[in-house]
Picture 1 (cartoon, helix red, strand yellow):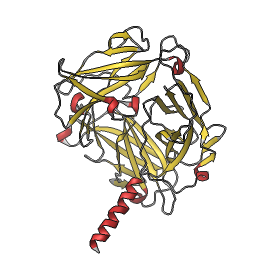
Picture 2: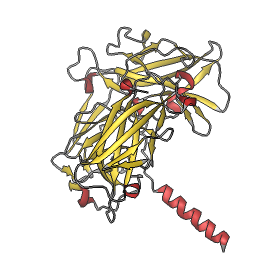
Picture 3: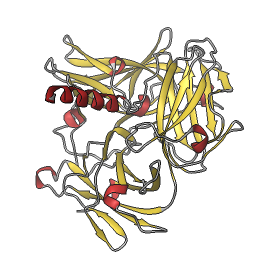
Picture 4: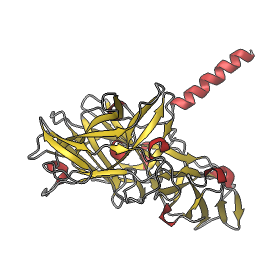
Length: 415
């Protein structure tokens, strides 16, 4: 009986894990997914209830296919919400994306699709919380999906970035201190009803969640942990700009024209053991831009970008990847660097739309564990952006609200 009970428990746990929503990466022919709020240039929209959400992407297959969108609501832990569609959405989803244009004067032919929510059919999102936007093709197959968050201003969220209090990592990590206070009514049983998510540089893959308040001071919840809210500080991102494909721009060594333009970046060096150098970046994001273009969405061309890193060959159980928000921090075969024994460098080429891009090199173990600092290093001085989302599910409530958003930059880091 014990063995049967164990099997049943494992099966039940597996079914729960299977319900946790994961973003679906797009196929190879869908590129440059730009996903943001109306006032936020990041690729992870965190918008106030009532603000606009904007999605833009390119389809390079030249078929001018129709695409449809569906919006789903989720709990704090990304399990499906019990809310019915009409409870969180006014209007209708499962609608065709009607705004699209074909590229103009480009070597790479593509169709550019744009979606804004709310619109005349999807009039508004009614409640705060976690959401997923799913894009389907003509064959009712899921092309890709992206997470976004909607918050309401019911709580004040103070965020301060400190150097690590753990002396073992004082040079390598940054700690996030949080203070939460309610605007209206006091929190009921905060250790059970309040949950937080801390996000570094809009990257959900490295987010920290499940941290309870350390203590309560009056009507404030205080988080001042030594290690639990610490992040590896990383290093400033490398970057390049190729708004003019016919000339070598910043970070580009030389160009070539074949079926498409080829841009060859300067060979990068390992920065792990070199002193920290301040180099302003946009924290892993990118911006599409093209010289002399009135509309970069359809006039910017696609270019093969050639990356190279001077590095000895890694052990067989480790891989090297190009990393950044240009593909939503996805690690796959397209980002894998391959070792060229003749020249002693790692190389890769990625098809990217013209613009300004941040990137870095990361090492991934065979078990999937990612080490962002293996090549770039970790330096407490690094400028990083942090967002703190506060979720609240009162006793008897049916969904997790996001009642506040706090944001801070480590440019103001203190001891």
